[in-house]
Every structure is written in structure tokens, then in C-alpha cells.
Image 1: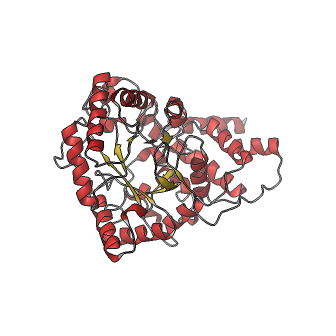
Image 2: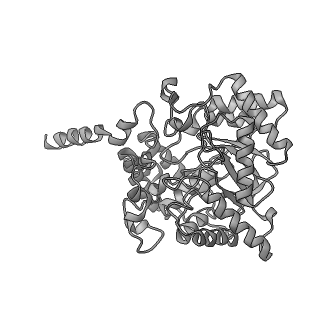
Image 3: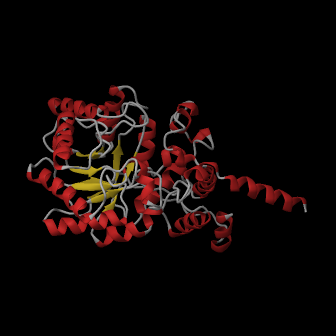
Length: 416
């Protein structure tokens, strides 16, 4: 519907092919001195969906060969199962081997990692509120696993005032939503305490920059103001869930980030693989012959089910058709669109194979998407507003009973 509408407005002629460059662009990440590729390698599946450490090392080698110099991990990784520590350890083993072989210098790659208030993967393994002691212990444990003496970019993985209950929402709702998992209150004093804990890491020369993840406009604003009061560098970026099917970041937090000089560095841009189109048509699989049952949304449907909600799948069907109209793979359009957003400094990709890795990296060689394509993307978005995020009721998002009612109404109209 949306595509057909805009086709009428812009004419039916075939769009011109979108050109590609030969290499990846590197640019400064926000206010930092980090000159990174626009594509950042996410690693949260290494140790769960990727079960062989050597395969993770092969993927890291391929990333370096393709020019990628930015790797993102966390003490919590891998995810879905086998949570905690393994991913950092595998990256550290790879880094040590490559440095000993003389094929890589530590300064050739920027490494980001994270501490989480649930304590998963931390030395103590229990929830905390980003106290100075716990944050330092987590950072030092990450240093040991990563086989390095500094961390380029260190995140607070998700707000302690929410805990795990904060994931998947596009609205704050009521405080009772987070009562069971929160470990702090989000007050001015609470935020200042956490900023001072980060300051301690700077003083110890453990970290070079820091950042926030899964934050909202209130949190970002409070952290930045506290940094200014306490003489601590502001966070460099915000790593939030964002995609064609979840543009909630474009609300208040995009403006707050802009005003404080903080850039976006989103994850989830392919919505757990849904926006590759492979769950609609197996031909969109990057890996020829790989059974779709092995893919995340089939193998672990209870992990991040928001990405495959009924409305998200319906929207994805329209994005697939739009990508084809412009001669793109759905994966390419989704990644290039996120890269092109004015508020983003880069995009985090995720992969479980070399074929997926190459497809993702190649998407960043596309020139900026044309205004006509972006207009059609916006038209689809106006019809399907952030279907991978919940505003009031997650169960309704995952069942979408109104789709059936809409189909019934359409059928009755057809009969008339």
C-alpha cells in the first residue's frame, strides 16, 4: 500500500542503481578521538549460536581483512544461552595470538565492552548498582579476559534504575514495571554516584572513553549534566535497539543526544535477522543451504521475540518489496538506512558466519540511499509504527489479534 502510494507520487520509472565504493569509510566517533569504521562488529552470538572458538577467530580475521577496526562485546556475552564471559575470552585469545604473530597491533583495533547491573559475567555474579567497587572489578575482569591493558570504549550496558525489565519498551510506563529488576532509583544523587564510579576508571587509566546503552532521554540528559558538574568526560555514544521496525530512538533521545554532542551507535538494525527477509523467503539467507531452523528466530523463538512480532513481519514484507524495487537486498537497505541517519555515528552488526559477515560489511560500501527511497521507507513506517517495541502491553504486541479482525473485516467487505 505505502509503496504503491508513493510510486504514484514519484512516477513508475525504475530507480537508478545505487553506487558502491571500493572501501569502508572511517570517521571520528562522536566527541572521541576514535577513528572507526562505520560498521562495528557485534559479537554477542560468539559462545552461543557460534559454538566454536576457532570460527569466531576466523570471523575476526575476516573483519580485519575487510578493513573493519571496531569490535563490540560485553561481560554478559554470549546471549540467549551460555551467558557471560566467553565472548570476551575468545576475543582476548585471538588478540593475543595475532599480536604474538606480529599480524596485528593493539592500536589497530578499537574494542568496546560493557558492565551490566544484573551482574551476569561479573566477578561476583550478583546484581549491583554500578558502585565504584563493582564497576572497577568488572572492568578489570574484562581487561584480563580481553588480554589488554585498556578498554577503548566502556559502556553501562543498561540502566540500573530499570534492570532487565527495561528491554523491549518504547515508553517508560510506570515505575512498578521495573520494581523487580531495578537496583537503583535514578535520582540526581544516584546518577552522580555512577558518574564518579566511571571517573575512577579514567583515573586508573583502565578506560579511554565511556558510553551508555539502552538509555532514554532522561538518563542521557542526567548523565551528561552530572558529567559537566563533576568534571568527567561526557559519554561518547548511546547504543540502543533501533531498526526500520523500531525508530523509537527518533523521539526525545535523538534530540537530547544531539544537544549534548552524543552520537547513536545502534544494535538490532537487522531485528535479529528478520529484516534480512530470510524468514519470508529462504533465498535471502546469506548462507546457501543453511536450514532456516538453525537461524535465531527459529532456534530460540523465546529470545527477543519482539523482532518477529506479527506486525513486524507484516512491515518487513513491505520493506522486502521496496528493497527489490531499488535493486537492493533487504539486509543492505536496512543497514544503509541506519548508517545514513543523521544522529548515528555508526552501526553494530551481528553475524554467525563468514557469509553473513561479508553481506553485512558490503552494505556499508553503498553510497547514501536516495531521497526517493527514504521517502518510501517513511511511508511504510507511518503505517507500521515501531512494531518491534511495546508501548503498554508486550503480550498484545506478540499476538496482534487486531490483524485477524482486520482480515475478517476486509473479507466481509469483499463479499459485499
